[in-house]
Length: 116
Image (cartoon, rainbow, N blue to C red):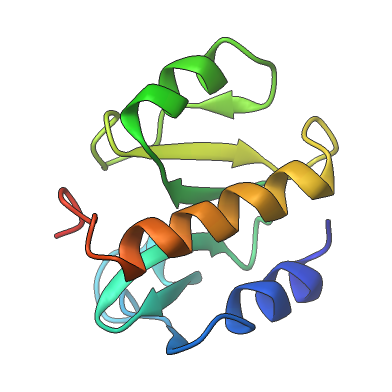
């Protein structure tokens, strides 16, 4: 999946917007593009190094996914509620889109504990 396809897909959900909240903070996180529903994030990735995206996920699903190739623990977020998804061909686009949609739904319905 390319960056514009993922960006357009994330923005296709109701009440979704994007931002780059880490511009003034850490040098290695200035290129992080975050997608929000309301004020809560559901997906983000580095626009300079587009190799994975980080998604909100049900804890039960995370355990199942980590056993598969293309999924790993996120950097600096709760391993219980977030997962990194490889975007370099290990995970089919249909699965990525399904996980992004589930992440959006989880956050949109208020199940965003750990999203602070």
